[in-house]
Image (tube, rainbow, N blue to C red):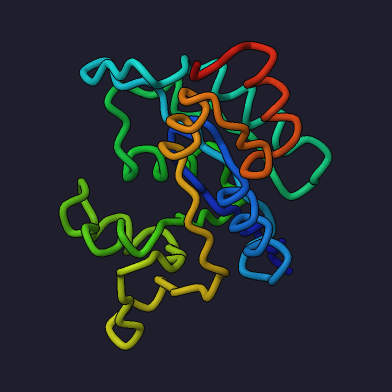
Length: 195
């Protein structure tokens, strides 16, 4: 009998910083049987887009690791750090599938990204070779009737927290500890990040 492949969700982003919205969504997907695990795939700094508020790659990786420690279904991944820049999702997913043949990869994206998916690089290839899970975003309808067979809308709780809001609040001297995992809040505080 063929061994069942692990269903691995790929949740990509700059995670600048990772917050409770990211964690709650990923936790929901694992605990409700959509996937077996989630890999938080930290996007590297785009060499063509120097963003002053973007923490360096290793610090964002450190924050993700702090956030997920102790929960067996979460994994922090720096896989894209070693791929050619800029890294396209299609390239990343294909490379992941080649490297980890014991897994089926599920791309986790918001309804806002799904609405613009036809503008991504090689969207047909992503859809034909990989699974996609779409979570709800405020103001974006998902037409479930027209979804391709391996694309699924998931009814996760709507948690509208943004990393931008957190960075701006910290810069204004606000205490946003309840929007962050305690370990992440601790690192941000002790390192004086986003001040």
